[in-house]
Image (cartoon, rainbow, N blue to C red):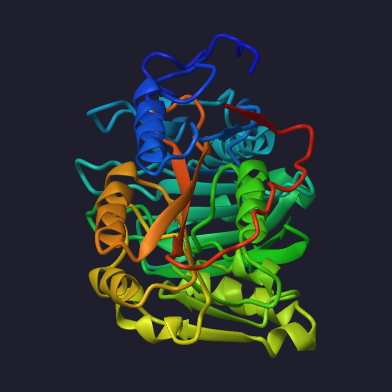
Length: 398
């Protein structure tokens, strides 16, 4: 990747500790290489993409004064906000929306949140940029039970954004807490969910649903996983979120069982399924709840796909996969430590064999890297499926 321009916010902004680094951290590369070597595999490919403007999703703190609001990230180890109006890794639409919000705060004299006194109106803003247009889904997080705490701010912000607003929401977070989003979100204007086209299907993201920040590279991961699933297979996807992976498999799979517990994810999944043809919907089943309590989702599945949170697989699910492994287990991991722990348990009885390791640099300029592995049950023989042809704008290195 070419060297980025100097960042005007570093220091003290902590968002990109490896700003300008051309690839993943050496420690991550060494750990992934060692994992591959343990299974007699070559060094794993590192899928990467241009870092500048890659972040389609941002949660930013709002502090300061109404006359001089600061919108950005907390300085490391503090609750002092570093304003980031010209962030190089944010999608340009996110920077533009943050500037519009700052102007609207000043126009309406809306007081930003003060943590010491637990007072003020606006605590955070969540901004999600659409790939298909310059539109933004925005969530204003207020220190109150209703949007009235924000006064005229939502209207002023919407007026400045105009047609660039895909959806505008208020999230109620009145508690003295470090948790960003409260339990209740209210739509103020626009669409109830942002729609993204991923691997040739429409995927819907309500404001409270989890979504990857690097959508171009995430789409590559979805297509890569799809290439690991044979035609007409019975598939179970656990921790599926809004279903971005499984929805793309409905057209050619015998069946897909989706498991998710988060209300936002289930809402987006329902919208995604409703957008599919009737024949595909007939092949889908939704098993809502904690993955560890829904191990029945695996019944009859030949291919199991898991994309768990940082803690890794829920223990009951892990033990079920150990005792009754599927023909193929595809695991997209956001934490190397929990992945290593889970793989040690999965491989120990000798029923599953590690067949592939790849990495995705979803968070350029940080120490974080996501890992894709797949394991096959002993005795299973899948044809080797080459990686699909990816758009030339994306790069891959070895």
